[in-house]
Length: 356
Image (cartoon, rainbow, N blue to C red; front, side):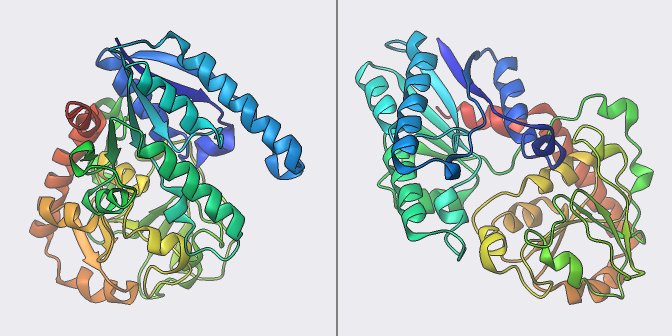
């Protein structure tokens, strides 16, 4: 039998900034190709409020929960687990080790690598960094196979002593949009329209939003925006992931992160060098070409498929945009629609899973 695990640990806020959509789309795609769902029920738990002993007890409880969830899986079976776990345990590697001994093939689909994601953050303690590394390394090296975001992430995971042949690059995340063909309006995307920025707009996450070039218009969609006096920036509201594709209006969707508009730096910016931002998939699946940081891992995919443009500094936008002809933009839109159709059908997830 082929199984996958769905963890039930999400709230409405997570859904609003699309934090839960990537996992839900994987769930829907795997079910559509015959995988059986196992539900791992977890309760929200503020671990930082627990003392050392209580935390250790909680880690054991979580391990017990995972053993129970996976107890139906036996010799010859396969199971896909989305990683990182929503409710992690220091002892999760013991669960995976036992499954392997029992003849179960365990695969992981990576959403984030937390040890890499937070490697630039000064707010993470040394103890937390060590824990993250132990949890990731000890679990992933026990897997039968891993779906990584791209070739750059694959290279990083190989440093965990994981065989190259076990790591499959996803290329880009799929993005399911129900009723897309009935509701789409590609006229919302025009060359001379503002640049779209969608996602978490809080200053600590997307500080660049508050330092955008004033000679370019921007339409902002998402939570946490702090209104400014910049007349070139237009806040358009916050929408659920399934509604967002139908309200976006602009020329290109911007894939950028970090505190600066001059380059993608620090914790969130540097992470773009290895991860596939989910917002890239949102834009492409919605039908809008993208503007991507030239050093981002996803940049090669955008260039190869001619579905957007690359910039190293947002100050380059006015000149680059002025050089794009209507015919060139329409070709990018056409290519975006081709890629978008694949994303909406779960093409990349299905293709990666076939490699197992």
